Length: 375
Image 1 (cartoon, rainbow, N blue to C red):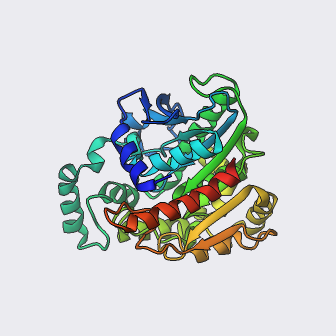
Image 2 (cartoon, one colour; image 1 turned 60 degrees about the horizontal axis):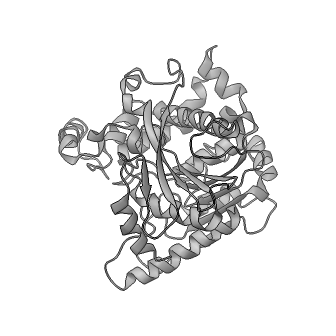
């Protein structure tokens, strides 16, 4: 596949408005499927967030393979602060083509089209950025692209957990629907695998470890630019969150979060007694619930593979190795270095130059590895 050419083709084809989209010269189609999140948010959400209608009712894309009778499904989970599916369309297309699977691009709570359109509009965000800088001083890595998430996490760092909780609960609802034969496009199956990138890999590890409703007992997880515990991440970026927001979130989960787990309420009960709640806590830091985490990950060692990038500064490869490298299996983590200018946020840049051939080649390398593992 010519990555650069296909990226531009799919970018021109995809829109949230159309229910079904055809891809030129391909039997693979894209369906936008409506979804309603019915997670009871009274105990698990910031009060203001319950008023954001886009987060409760939205659509998600499904790439249908050539073989519509396929019983294979891959859930593709994206990175933090994404506001568009554009980057991921060619990823999903490749996986659909080479694994013969239905590919679900499911948005994390308050991301992509689960957030107000104003959050990705520089004109709408300019006054928020000015207010933040005037009241708090100049902040490193502050930008129009990250101001919405930065403000939200600075105000309430529990939104990081609560967004993941809602997303994982939504995913359980969706996959249960498929397992019960109730999905409008995907045939009845319980064959679910996951391709996860960046913070999506963090979420996917927690879901796999928690295994809600036994949906993921046989699932394989392929992670790209992800797999580390939270404390080994560095989320400060002009495309993710500013330095103040990251410091607030990092400090809260490393030093304050466990102190809040007192009393008798649904949130505390969930985090202290449920397998998935315990999994979240264990993925904050290497020393937290270490035995719990390592025992489960060791049982999952044949179901997990990761490719980490040498120059990734957001989720450094050392953090991935320290989290997964001790499992009793060789080569669970591969460290690659791509021979062009890349970042964590943009591992496959689109060049209008001969460099595009290098990107095409290395995209093919990464996704052929993923396809072989997940097929």
